[in-house]
Structures are given as C-alpha cells and as structure tokens.
Image (cartoon, rainbow, N blue to C red):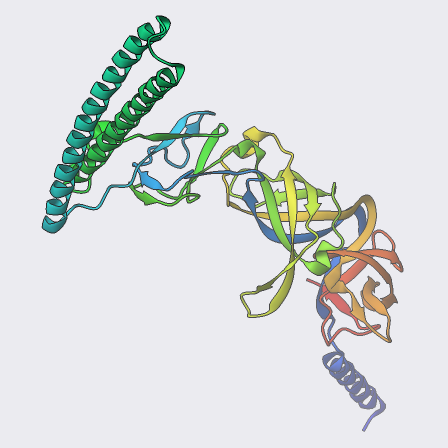
Length: 397
C-alpha cells in the first residue's frame, strides 16, 4: 500500500470517528425560561365569598291571626311606614247540627235571663220610687215634729236600700244583654267565617324603607305570632362575607384592601376588610375534609353605580392583599426546587443550566419574591425536569 493510500484511509477514519462522536454527543435539553424582573408584587389570599345585608329587617306577624295575601314581591321598593301585609282574626270552626241546636238553646236561655232581669229592674224601680215617696212624706212630718228621728232614719235607710237594689238590677240587665249577644255571635257562625263588618284588621307597616329581598309567605292562611313574612333591606349597604381558612384569617387585619373579582359584572371591585369574626366554625369541603373556617366581612368601596346589579346572597371571589410593593425582584414559583436543604434555581448562561442557590421571600400564587441570589435580567428555567442538571446544555423553546 502506497503512502498516499495510507493518508486517505487515515482521513476517512478520522471523519468517521468525528461523525460517530457527533452522533453520540448529547443534544441540548429543551426548556422553558423566563426573565427575572423587578415589578409590582402582592402577597394575597383568595377565596370564594357571597354578598350579604349587614342590617336586614325581617317583618314578622305581631300576633297570631289569618294572613291575607302578601302583595309586595322580591325586588319591590318599599317606603318606611308603608302597609306591607294585613292580618285578621282566624276563622271560627263551623258548627255541626248538635252544636247549632245547643247554640239556639243558649240564645233562648240568654233571652229569658234578659227578660227576667228587665222585670226585676222594673220591680226594683217601683220599690225605689215608693221609698222616695215615703221618705218625702216622713220628711214633712218630721219637720212638723210628728215623727221621731229614729223613724226618719229608718225611712232614709229603706230609700237607700231601694236605690242600691235598683242599680244592681240595672247591672244584671246589662250582664244578661251581654250574654245574649255572645250567644247570638256563636249562633251566627255558619261556615267558618264572620261578617266583614265584624272583622277587625291589623295593618303591619314597614319599619324602614328599602327593597324586599325575600318573601317568606305570600298566600293567605293562618300565621303564628313572630312568624317571618318579609325581609326588607337597603342594597346600597351590601357587604361581602368570605369564610377563610383559619390559617389565612389570622393574617388578615381590618383595613386591608380587597379585590372582588368574577362577580359577573365588568371589571373588579375594590373592597376593604371590615372585621374578622372572633369565632370560627367547622365546614366539610367537597372532598370530605374538615376545614376550620372564619367569617371575614368586607365592605365594597367601589361606586354604587358599578355594582348596582348585585343583590343579597350573590357569589363573588375575594383576593385579600396581605402585602404589596412596586419594586420586588420576583421569579416563577415553579422555577424553585430544593437541593441540599437549600432553595435553588437553574440560570441559563452561555447555553448551559447553572444551579444557583437563592433565598426566597413572600409567595403570591405563581410568583415568589427573591431576596438574594438573582439579578434582574437573569433567565431562569421554569419547571426543570429530570434531564436538567448543573452544567447541562439547554435550548429554549
């Protein structure tokens, strides 16, 4: 083999080795990356809430009775002192044949007692008139000293006794007349109702002006004392109640700003924490997990015209801003991972991934504040997988 052929074979071998090396050389790992920047950062807590009236007025039946049909409907405007519903006495049960007979006999007996009392009154009246006449005659005789003082005193006593007896008889007539009226009222009951003129009505008025938010009763029928009929409230005083997890509620303070979103209208509404209730309650989540919740009341500070369509019990989503700043270095939370008991990220430099320890700060959803370890403009890998390690070649998709 000549020298020239040896050189050609050597060059071919080198080319093949180079091609083989290129084939076996690992290709860059495709990754997604973002740039670390300074900007607005807010630590928030989000949860679902509902609107509520802080001071609703429930109009109830003041006494037991028969409720007439309720006219006002939910959404109607109500003025203060306006009649909202009417009560009347409950119907008396109808009488059967036996009860009717007894009622007729009671009326007849009451009428007889009245006639006897009137006769007694007439007799007592005659006796009183006779006693007064005798008293006048004896007075004349006493003035002429024809009778003694003892006889005169006895005559006056008889006159007073007759007067008192007449008055007692008159009262007995009144009692008998009342008994007759009561017996007639029982007899007049025929089909469970009474004459319209005999039914006193109670007109229940609205204590305040506002909007009817709920109608507990609308059809006529018996109603008990204290039974609710209507709810009236002022929708301009609506607030939002959010039942936060107790671990989140302890970080919320009155006066904190709140953003109310996804309530159905255009744009978000501004709010402010009014109160964090001191008592919590247990609620079972949709997954069957026991959760300790705390009610938090939020005032709506946006103009009323923006949320005029909201009503009582509507759903909203509240985002509580626990802390915020406009100049915070931040990175995606998905870029952070634990390595050697330390938080780290992969920074892309010269096409390679370099593990960089960082000190994370506050977290807010998908972003985390970075206290130390990164600079603005650094490119960090989001969602680093198992193929990414320190020094590996990467390619941004």
